[in-house]
Image 1 (cartoon, rainbow, N blue to C red):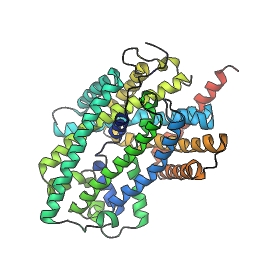
Image 2 (tube, rainbow, N blue to C red):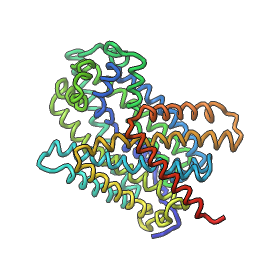
Image 3 (cartoon, rainbow, N blue to C red):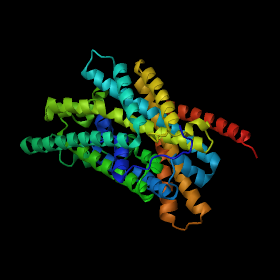
Image 4 (cartoon, rainbow, N blue to C red):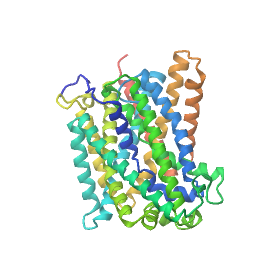
Length: 441
């Protein structure tokens, strides 16, 4: 093991975009479609248009900072440069909550979905199998993992293309079940308040595009390439999300009012619509791909988390051993194995509890949103305060709007999520104070 901190610069623009799309998942709206349809009174496509714009502020801030500070560690490095080292540690600590829990949720989703297709095999067995395969890919090197990830993305987008073709054919043959404008204007009773309430849930579908910035030191091109990848990834995801939710919105046989009255049907609403309107074969295929896809989202999340730990350890914010790089694969092996081990423990724990998934999902987003807030503050601190920039739109207005979106979603988050976030923040403050006290003058 080498401790030089030199990672392999082998990722192209396509590889970076693939990592972001893998983390997000092109089929992310499938699982939450029913909830969003009920909450927005059918205006789900509008919800995702607004959510894409809202997340665009954060993507733009990542693009600006990744160009100036092309280091592993992402928001940790940005906050250190824009707000100071203590704030950088806290930003990294908050992001760590997100990066450590998201792969656990993804592995658990994978296990539950595959168990539903093969009930004779326990969910935790599928969870462990997915963990073993993707951890092996991560340890083999960032380039191989990116190639496998590209194949997975091709399969997911190809399936989405099949869904679009079959849906259009069904609409031509039988017409829509709801008005053509319903996915944008609602199916009756849609109001700005209802739509914005659904947006606070929909933006969580995009969490993961920020992981692209974690691979800045493995970027083989110009530093600006990372920012481009972040923006392209968000734009592509937004188009995919709007397209699939529009088609689902005009094919859905149930009204939003009926879905709202049947909460148990909301989780499977997209699959049920596909089964009824397009065919059971396509519904089963969607379930299968949606079951396998999260394993590779987890692979990307673990890789991104290891780069965060690596960057913080290199700056002596965490134990120095986490900054070691494997001489053969050029990945931060110790940080990667540490992240993977924590993920496995949490995943198996949750898989063996009836409420495990609910607990994880309720708290997984709070760390990312808090880190986004610190990111936006870093843009203002770095460009306006430290460098005296007078470019008010990119360096002040955009980050302020982005921070407002993140804070708003934190405010409407569940009490459990806010409690866990507050405890995690308090623990980070204690560690930061201890770290500062031990540092020699």
